[in-house]
Image (cartoon, rainbow, N blue to C red; front, side):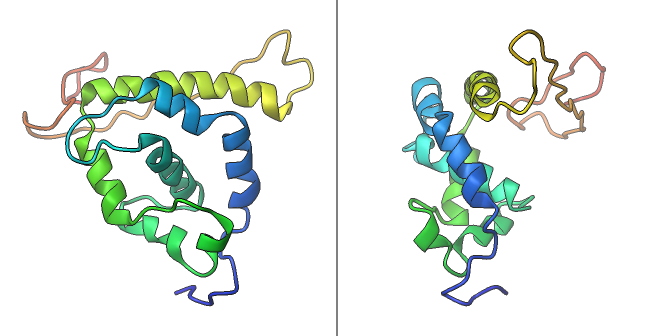
Length: 153
């Protein structure tokens, strides 16, 4: 456990989240995502927390606790508890996922403008996005349906 209150375990998140903030991640989420339910409040704060957690290597809600270790609270404001982030995700429905996709598409365009990583990208650039397809089970699972690959995804 990384619990020294004076050290930051994932200092590499500072430039990553600064770029996300400069590109307007929170604003895009606030503009496009309208989740309902009990945990639908402040998606503009919760989605960046989820992004930061994933960038730090979290691959489950329990792993989002990585944002609360050491001096992370001194570096980042607005860090939410893993249980709050999980409740937020469970409150999202299929329509909210489409809203998040819209925000992420616009964020990708803004990131390309902000980062300036590719010389000549103002003329033409290709972005490859992994389209993983995984099986889900149960008709009650929100968004479960047969897609183009003919698997329940």
